[in-house]
Length: 304
Image (cartoon, rainbow, N blue to C red; front, side, top):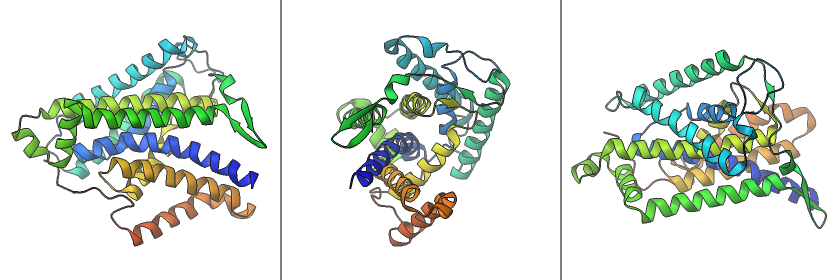
């Protein structure tokens, strides 16, 4: 029983990361119908902002060495600026482009960011010692729970709760929900499209910044493609949960985390190398049963 509970804790922690990334992707899709594959590279930007630009293998902390009450907002601000610049320079001129065009543009942005990181920091992965004390373990009976996993879950719940309150209780949040339902009608009613979209990019930047800190602390290493797998699994989570549904993005994130962790734990050793293939096969089965996702959006209105 203890091994299963241990795996369940790992699954919830991984699912929390996927849920946060999926929220960032799902938020933009709900308003813009944009599948932003560059979202994973926003995570990379936040992670590399922690260190001094250098080609050395062992990184020297820059912002990562600041006190955490200053460091966390600074990293989030850097990622927000990167996200807003991306919107202003790339996606705003393509407002009326088709969804496939926007998706291809997001791929281009992703490669530009990756190569920018390569030029500034080199291609070698870097070891980073960030908040190493967070990896200490807490004993709950016979169950060993890393403190970082508890922090990840708590942070995810707080951010999800805060985003829910923002969308339901604030004027800007209500405007974002209206734009997600019917962008053209929302504009007719006085919603400023660029402002709402900018807010969506800013919130996705905050989520990406938090994920970059959690991921860096957990892995202890950086690479210029570190955000790509996260964005891929988060996109799958958005599809499984239901395109355009933020609740579905969260449910999909935890579902993918559970599937991946349990497959890694219980597949025969010879098959564990093919874990992702089994995970995506399960995703296909889910979509065959529920093509619109586990928690489908109430409407799938075309983006204007």
